[in-house]
Amino acid sequence: MIIYCVRHGETDSNLKGIVSGRSDEGLSSKGIAQAQKINLEIADTKFDAVYVSPMRRAIETAEIIVPEYQYIIDERLAERDLAGLKDCSIDELWQNPLWNSLTEKRTLEGAETFGSGLMRVQDFLSDIKKQFPHHEPTILLITHSFISRCLWAIEQGVKDDLDYTKFHHQNDEVIIYKIK
Image (cartoon, rainbow, N blue to C red; front, side, top):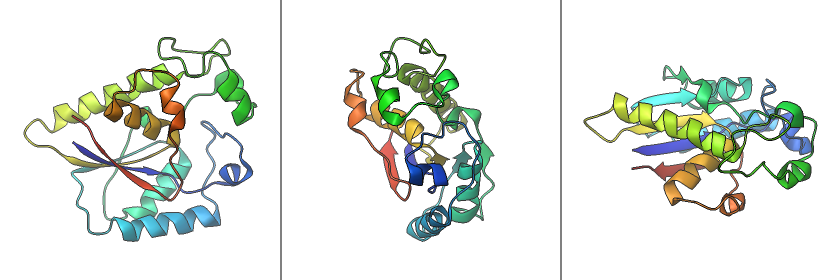
């Protein structure tokens, strides 16, 4: 399948460098402009389905970039659950010994690990394949950097929990994944 992955437009937390996790904030004025840019970038692309994170910033992005589509909200596309790490800086998060774990489901503070996110995204992809058994669909996902990082790791076959740290998805960027 071909997946066009869009990270939601910028929020005030993104601008301040704050990890917002599953907070439900909306787009900043720059985030709205970023979504409008993406709307123009993908205007000629036809999608078999559009899936969106339940977070407000992703829904607002969807309403701007694909207003003509009925989208499906899928909980598996939500941002990473920070649990007891929600007040940490990004540097503190990356130094947490289980944050990058591919084998543990949660950190000691209850935050979702990378491995847990991978399982969530793999489950989502499995369901997509079942919905389109007779052709390779073109899917649009409007989601978060964490989900995009998981897609990248799946596409690249990343097996080392440090390799995926090299990846970054900008707020105004469309990344196209080819998933088998």
